[in-house]
Length: 562
Image (cartoon, rainbow, N blue to C red; front, side, top):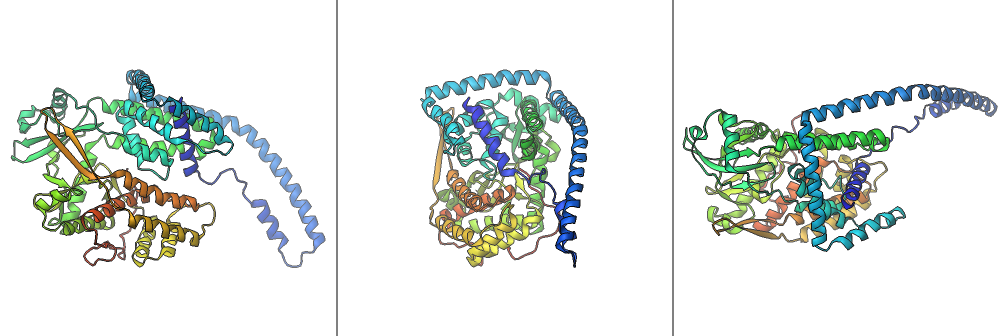
């Protein structure tokens, strides 16, 4: 019950956040016609009265005619919509396969039961009842208690597996769409699962490459370096060149499961839109369709390989390879389910002690990373859109290594001028100009008070500048009893800052685009690295930092890929 309530809350909130102007507003055609006639020079009041009566009579006749036409057309339209919906349902079922759908239904029941037992074991039933009661109070204007719902839904998503873990990550990265409590809670959504047996991994590699694994690799570590919801990574040595490589392999069965899960979500959104037209107007189907396309795209490693090659070409073209690198992919031994790439040895960008072993000047290393990333936003087809500490490494030769190109972004041309204006305003510390730039890139149904937004931004920037970064160390014990540490920034801090920005925008009636949220989140990561590695560095004003805010952007369509 709690999970259903939480799901309804997410749908309603996302619908409100994405609602377009109502298509049912009557066009002011009659009023315009009447006003134009009434404004003609020399029209006297008695003539106006006659005109009013004539127009009113014409309006009534037109309305009656429109009503009769609508009564005839509406059943036909509903029948056509129902037919399209049925065809889409059959297409989704056919793509996933009926056996997969039935299997996932049983797994979902098991996941729901496991989640319910977890709630009972942790003594969380009373808070849930209190949260359910808040829904009733919310009808009368009371506050909703989202935290308890969000916790249950996050656990359920983890128990449901790969699709829902990825969906949880989408929620965590979308403060423009979902309530704050859910964004915070889904930051904890664990994308670390048990490793698949090596025999299964070996089978997939040999099926895709069409030869024994020993013909491709002179050595292959059967224990994975990392295991996530959709794939796991092994280190190996290429037989042909002797190079050490990382081999990323899609886990068996993941594709069919995700097709079934995402197909169900898509069909559910379509059915809701058919039964409740208000939800259709709220773009719910568009949101689910975007998620579905994005997540299915992550299952094709050829796309990630292409992203890697684009970024490597950008580094070479702008002579940046002495500062930063991306792994070299090996397309001749890579497929849709297998990605073979150069293996990097290094430490996370947040590991100050580790960096000092490879770089005499951590501040200069940070500046290199920031300059390369900022230039990619402006001059590359894409920019890395997930620069947490695990994806930015300081290598043994002192260069910065960008890894994992599964999530990349492209800034739309429509908001690029506003992004540049925002950067210039930040450099000038002009909060009124900051407010105007945010208004230029956002959507709003009413006028925004520039001075109020500027005052709120002044307070927010003050909080950001006074917040100190926190480093977390996560320890894992392997099968042999050895301890490995993962050093990184406290991501909840970055999320809190991001939520603060969008809370200020929302309070001022401004809806900022999701692609801007993705860009800002990466900037906040760099802000945390800045305060950790070089607390005295002012990246907006230091001449060594080149954010290129005054340069023009080449024309072309810009979209976001997530």
